[in-house]
Length: 312
Ligand SMILES: [Zn+2]
Image 1: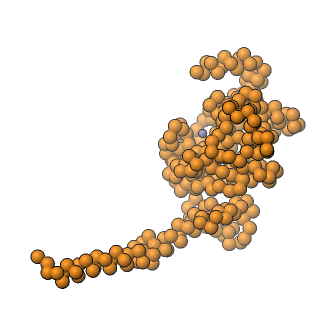
Image 2: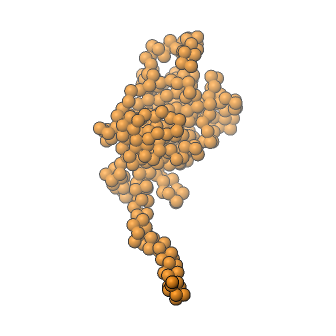
Image 3: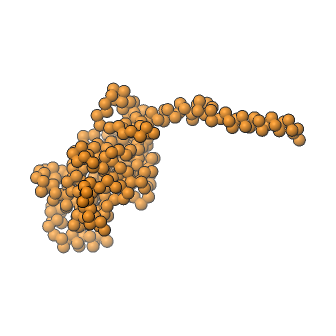
């Protein structure tokens, strides 16, 4: 049996350790302290390139202004670039980069844990959203699921596993101008209006500009857009009305596949970034259609209806 004095000694020692441990941790003595924290922060900042966590301030990815930030960008690629491994339906993601919200880009609350992707995809989305907002101030792109931090299976999605897929909302306009809400994706009806909210409508002009910015990006190459046929038809018609050249329309059309489930968002997939080869594998595009098939489908409602029924 311990005497009272020994008990006091043991309790005193335990209390002392309990009090001093957080201090020791902060000094880095247990390996997870301030030093580790700073390193993590630095990597985080490098990867994001445009937002400082905790400071609540946005920084542009494009036009990284100062020399320090340019130097950081170089370090970032050397030290911890993301790698897309395997196919979008089977693969995973190493060093996934979190997409961050900004004035021109919002993330659906339910998709926040799945906002990771390759460096190329994250920056592509930010550049395209910036581009649209520069032309139409106040525009805010709504982004849904990308991938989990380490990739792999994600909910009901078949793909979204290797950091190269993103679900993005259409630009929506209401009676008072652009709609900024990103609580959900808006379901677009055949008349171009939001189902159950007819005062809101698909903004074909801004959404077309988004597709154009994404498809013409010089850094990341878009492999595929999946959109509901009736939404794509509206976007295409809008482009023709505005006098967009047929070569430009056909270029984007060659990337589009249609799927009736994609009436409230666009599924975007980028091709394997060259730096991720040979780990990354480009799977075949889904349901790509020839231009001829497009024309015949657009000209015949009956045929379209039959195809929809056949797919059920
Ligand atoms: Zn998707």
